[in-house]
Image (cartoon, rainbow, N blue to C red; front, side, top):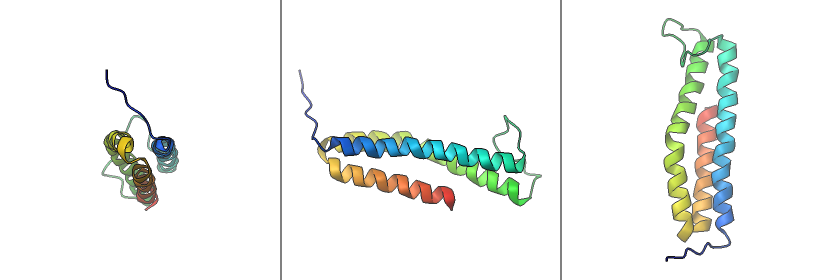
Length: 108
């Protein structure tokens, strides 16, 4: 039977992973704010192409940023958690860097 011994610094990797879930919640709230401002009813994923106003554009951007985030989060988490077994500090720093860059993408 194989035994995996975790470095005491692996907790930082878990914190970096948790930061991505917090950002996902923030993305959801951000998208909801823009959906409400644009008056886009559920279940529409995006504003129709006939809408060319700024509110619709902002909602579409927020929705796409959130969709892009959730498309990439599982791959990042898998890589983070696996790499963290051997390189916990480096992985944690890169994980937080990924989350910060995704936040900047969201607000940009």
